[in-house]
Image 1 (tube, rainbow, N blue to C red):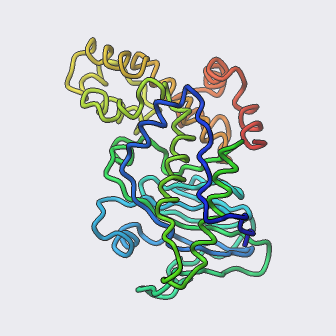
Image 2 (tube, rainbow, N blue to C red):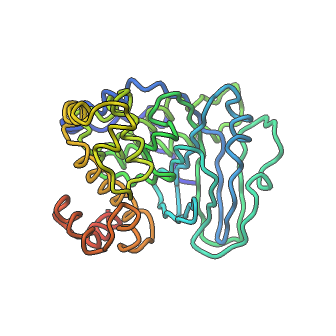
Length: 338
């Protein structure tokens, strides 16, 4: 377990925001999010497990919530998480989020039999926070698990603002803040005496808002109102189509039909709120998804190109380079180095 920093009872300061992120950060502060750390685990290579069904987890942790968002903080080691056949990798200091609670597999760097996660913990109800120690004695991976509840449309599965798995790789001052936050959570959750342990719920909320900011800062035109756009009754239906099926060759007419408005009104709203015409937003969203796939998965560039709507790797590479002034392969190397 990582050593706790001196003064661990002080919540680390949130890193300074860049001016372009100010509006996004302000919108995220207004999100109503509740959450808590509920489990921590120390796995040793090799290890792998299949997740508890989200509805079962929700019934146990937040029975009144309409939706639950599980997340994992990787405190030490390296691991993968897999949803729908796509495997994403995460390292120490990374934050893994399952925005829609999809069933998933999780494991380490060595091959291992996959076990049911519920077989690794004592049956509920729990009188103290569960701690898992599992594996075959190899290199350790320490993971802190938590959950969030929110009724905000940001977590609406129909809108699909996020991919099924979100791996955030913080850098700079944000990385230091997340690292210190993990140490703080580990310290708090290691106190099993309920009379002395403090709830880390407030820390979880701050940490998760920072994680969302880091991810959404790369979304198309965040400073012009991305959060506001997904709440807009005209824009939300059109954005939902783009987010759910970015590979389709959408037309403005199709998007306007979904929103039950004219093409001119849809175009006006996109430009007014997001600063982009609808098809330009589609292109920007495809590039946003491609960034995530390049950084956190092993999918080849050609496969990613098809996922985000390009018929050839060459066409995708040209579009990506126009947007980022670098090739997809170079972006992947730079992202992993960071």
